[in-house]
Length: 434
Image 1 (cartoon, rainbow, N blue to C red):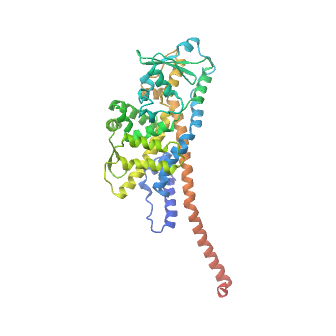
Image 2 (cartoon, one colour):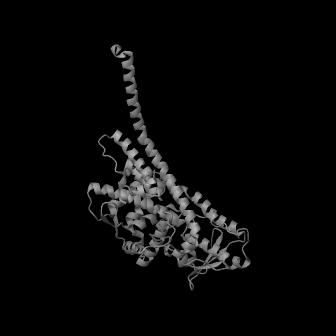
Image 3 (cartoon, rainbow, N blue to C red):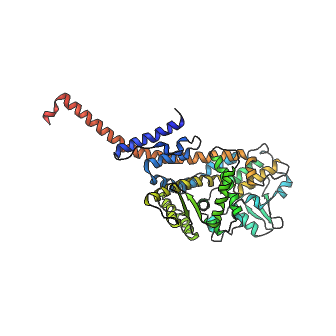
């Protein structure tokens, strides 16, 4: 039996159990789910399973749980895998004296793919993009850029900006074994900032921050290209190639994000959406620190009504919500991968590693080309993120299956008991005593 047949059987079985409890429910049409024939990506299949069992409420809980639990719990596992990517043949060597004093010099634009380091953390948009509670690499880099020629220490590195060359000089704070240096940095670094991830996810959907930052179409296009390549790796496609058709779609979406007015097909035709910055700001502030997955998912859902410029029937509104939740889940997975492969601090680490292995030559430039150079690292991080996300959603799916099966089992057992009682009565003639 093929994988697709096995997937169909899952939906058929769920449909049978549901029909048993709800006699009026129509038979399940499993071929309506694209995930049936998707052999590589398990997440869409798990989401379809949850949607089949409990509908929109299951997708809402997934969204809420991802932002109240998953994002806050994945960092240790990601750090473990990331440290392995920096174990090279020179790991037991110490830095040279020249590297300790000179380090590397790298163009800001080569590490800052999304233009974040140009945004003041104290600005309105900066308040959503930066962790304002704790020091991290991005804030340190911004401080170095804002204070030309001043040494800014973060973790185990010193950053100094040269405005003439638009380069950051990165030097180690002390000499140590190369492998130990990378391990120490990763152990003490902040890789996943929930507020920043949330802001990036929502901006990828609505373009609210892109408009606020006055990002150009070309800047958004560059970011979308990187995101698409990472999405392909998550789906087990490591060609690192973008088709002409995808380029056309990217250019159109880049233009929409720059204007802050986007168009999506979430299952019932094209809809227009435009989310005001104040609404985005309020939404992110309201969920900050919340541990209630349904409250958080309600805030995500609330942006649909606030942003939609298209009238829809009640049935279509439900379809739109389902499509919205599934799209947000997919975008979140990509943003997690970005945080550990293409974020500024990760590109700096890759730049340092490439310099140490290539006689001082830094092999960081075009992010799309860099993906091919650091292919193994990206693949390993993608596999770990998919494992974590799939395991998380699987656990939720199992919980919903148990909720479905409990009343089914109770009903079946009750029917069997009644049958047995009837048989016993008929065999013993007990009816005349009752």
